[in-house]
Length: 137
Ligand SMILES: [Zn+2]
Image (tube, rainbow, N blue to C red; front, side, top):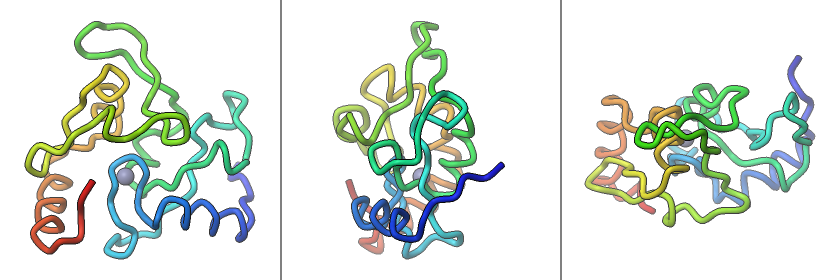
């Protein structure tokens, strides 16, 4: 069942995020589908619909994350949580290498993998946006 998020709360989440996905940094202005507030800790895992537990997410990040909170690190096979935009800083977990989003930590690795940051079409799209000056860290 979808969770009701008030217009006011949606606006706060979007403005705080400067209208770009807090996971992959994709700008809402050029997205085909409107970004949505994502429950960082999903409701079914005890998360709440509050500003502290919401992050603006593009359709792809939101869909690939689904109800998950983490995954097994491809390097260590240890269960790690996803990057948390409320409690962590993006550039401490990721860096841009050309138009690829490269992970710098285990949390970054599971996020890049599960959210499919570097699917070929996403990398190609990011590259075009970078050339147009519409995508940066
Ligand atoms: Zn995204």
